[in-house]
Length: 192
Image 1 (spheres, rainbow, N blue to C red):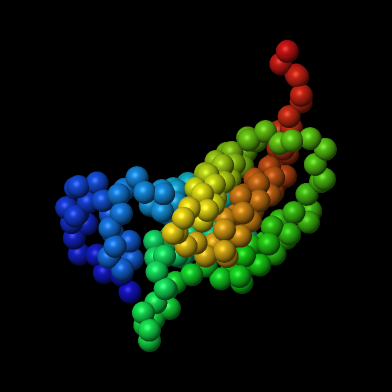
Image 2 (image 1 turned 90 degrees about the vertical axis):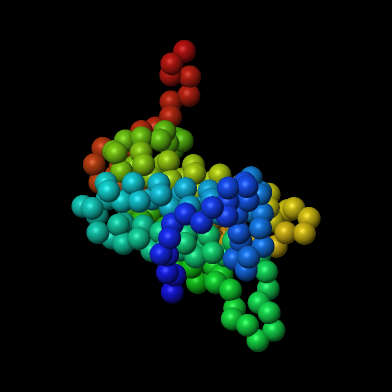
């Protein structure tokens, strides 16, 4: 259980922040950037949910994703193994990845096959879901860079989750458009 009595601590005034376990890192550290971009993704999902209230199934999926994103942030903020006999740190697990895949398949099953790339837009919900897609893809790139960095540990399931997440947002945007206007398709060279 998290208890926050005081919001400001002044401990970050020097440009550093604490990871789970107390280790300090600069606020521009790649690990901090990774979980910060996951947090940004979560905030974007919150905005998208304002526009999905008429679609209870999609809204419930997005609510589960928001909870997963807090799990993912905790995972990335705690690179350490537990001390002997200590509690296991919160990690993204494979069942979260497979649930996301099942939800992608469920949303995709009634969509028409694509014959062109999709432009970000259409309904307001779809437009916001495309923003979620691009921000989550950035979170994936930063996390992949972190995983490739010497001395850094990243849970492989966290990377798989992020890879599926942007796919989810793409299909969710198509789903939102299919309910109303349909996808906005790219027409190569149309503006020449």
